[in-house]
Length: 180
Length: 162
Image (spheres, rainbow over the protein chains, first blue to last red):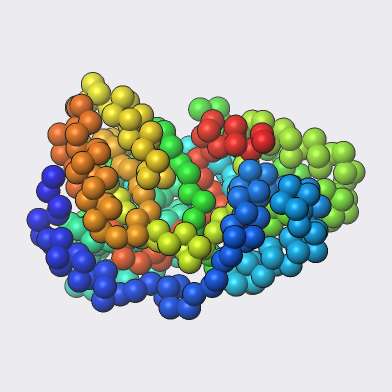
């Protein structure tokens, strides 16, 4: 395996250590009860507090309080996740971006403002930004490329990969934003 | 893939539930001006059609494994599907996409330490028959991530039925 020759492992590690994510700075303490409640919610996010309480031998009030505490700390969201196709997105692309002459984070933030970009990460390795783009159909690509990406300064190259099939997609951990 | 037929009410429901899935049917019914039965029926249909799934998303502090990593795989073209299935069978892997591009499979996982990524990529994926090259990259910073939209795979639907 080639671990991206441009930036060897040690350099990748140094890069990681230098930049701890902001959400690691203050810890939220989960106990076993929290973990059990989350487990029940993963099985059925629509279970009411009473049902969860009965399964775990708790009171409904405790369940409600615990859920609220985790939600308030931005450590839990119980949500409906909708399929790409429910939004009419039938064409997904993963695009790797090389940045030149500008900070990668600036370029990434500008790209992230586009509604078509539904995930954007600054990454180690041969590319600087990795993003996932959702389009309704192939025709949307010309607008995105010629009218949107072309106005973002600092993009040196865009390397696309067309998503042909998704075999697995299970993320139950994600960065959680505060509620508006 | 045929486009699903969603009406305005379906969309309103999805919007509400994607912010908070713990709102009661009664509350949704009042908000949208329909009966509780309609709400219940619609939710059931959306779930059965694989258009929505309910999940509890936790923040990184609870997970410990907080570092999103990409494993880019080049596999023999005639083995892509088998390799992708084999990779998706690894418990550490969260997502597997088959792509047409420089690599034909993208696997994503969450790791705690870099050693774990090397172990998964080199010891577990590179050794799968048909894989001839693997590259890794790590998300140093996530600028945007829409957790409310995903691919709902049959596995997720089964989980929901519990």
